[in-house]
Length: 316
Ligand SMILES: [Zn+2]
Ligand SMILES: [Zn+2]
Image (tube, rainbow, N blue to C red):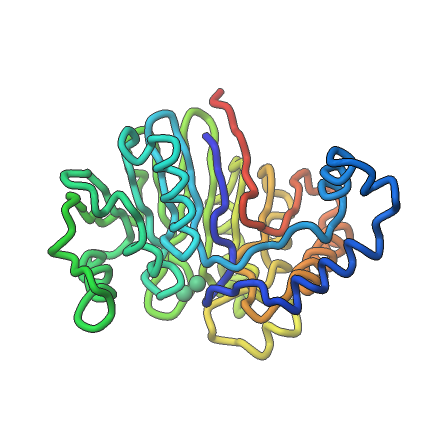
């Protein structure tokens, strides 16, 4: 299994501004020593180690889970566009089974779908999975009327929508898939995908922070044994209190939930579009400090999601 993040931002795509780019360029230039700029190799090495040479990214939710001959795509936010181009470049758009898994159908999780190349390929089989029975209607609506030039019924691919049951594992091609209802306006479902002894959990968008004790045990059971657990940690502790009932969480509750859990890595995801890179880094630093205080024996690693971040998890 290989897991790769293509969109990590919540709610609204957030391209980097010129002012933010200049901030990074200024810091890069100010901190560079003459030896860092001496030749192309030295420059590459400097760019590899400085925190100013990259960004968490501004595309909305999209996660690729690559299996042997199957590509699973968790949510179709704006990150899907780059994933689609990547599939085209290496030929998987033709060769691999393509399965979408939707947490829910808010804009930030579906708006990349009309820009995904394979939906225009004649006869291309694409399977869409969710916890709802009306996925096709919801995907069709965003291409209806004045919203998009190409209508659903003009697509040449064969897109089949399926509803996943809540209370049992489902075999989807090479994968075993489980869903769990989340706490979010209307409805949303978290996922667990297992394949050859490896697993990834994807739990966005959900508001566990309103009544954490009620759901802690259930979440901990759902993720038990997973290699990578991606969670909605949109807000800092104080920010959350300005956004109660928005359907999102802080990372601190998940650190509490998974204190003793057998997981490999806990990933802060669905970053607030209002948060700059330094602000996301500050949240990550606070979360690491909180982990040291309340979960000093936790075996897992903590990270803050960035576009391009990936995990290679060989089957066992
Ligand atoms: Zn969202
Ligand atoms: Zn949402």
